[in-house]
Length: 109
Image (cartoon, rainbow, N blue to C red):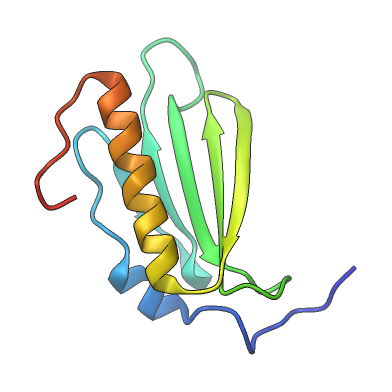
């Protein structure tokens, strides 16, 4: 197993500041250590309809790790080399789910 790599991991405070607010029905939770979770509630499942978790990548060589869930299942993960790149990816993910759910994404997203 790889050891913690704090040299390339994103600064948790900077990551939290630059990620967008939760749009529409999404909620955003900022946890300690720079873990930010976006959740879209579900009326049909005990799990969330969708979840996007972002955290500094302290176990790899990237700056940030993004993990997606759809319902109760994992929907993949990616690693990004910069905070700017993950901000764009999170914005895309949130907009995409709002579009699929039939909600109009806010202009600032």
